[in-house]
Length: 196
Image (tube, rainbow, N blue to C red; front, side, top):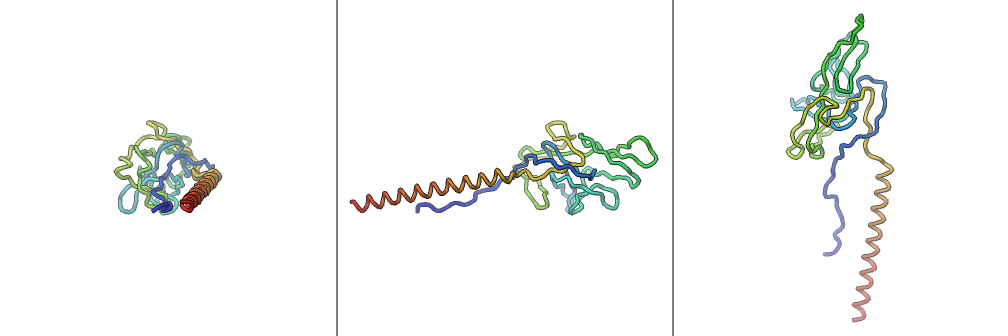
């Protein structure tokens, strides 16, 4: 049988950085470089994500904006905090009403994997480790190859729509060219068979 067509063999997730988008929310965080945030899932497992859009729940804990999963290690903002500062190294401090100096609340750590492409997607921008991703390597942002944290910024999609459209058009042209070559070869073989 000749020419069975084509099909997708596999898809691959690329965890390269997207463009930075500045926001007015001090709880929006972006990892500039490699790394993932850790969140506690309802089943007790730790999920990993690059989406840094966080908010506070009714207890003051930092949680994901959609499902409300708690950031790990847990950071709890006191109710009388008037200013939240998160350093590039993940140190979280607040200024409490009536005090001049900032009070350090804790440290946001990030993790990286030997092969981030091997992570298993479970939806809502969350991933779980697999045998091919390797174990999570936790550390302080900005050290040991982990990216810095940028406050009041979010990471947009890392897909360049224009580039992908050009790639798709290019693939279509190559396919059309190959189809014409096959058609021409088929006509030549048919001509040769008629002459014999």
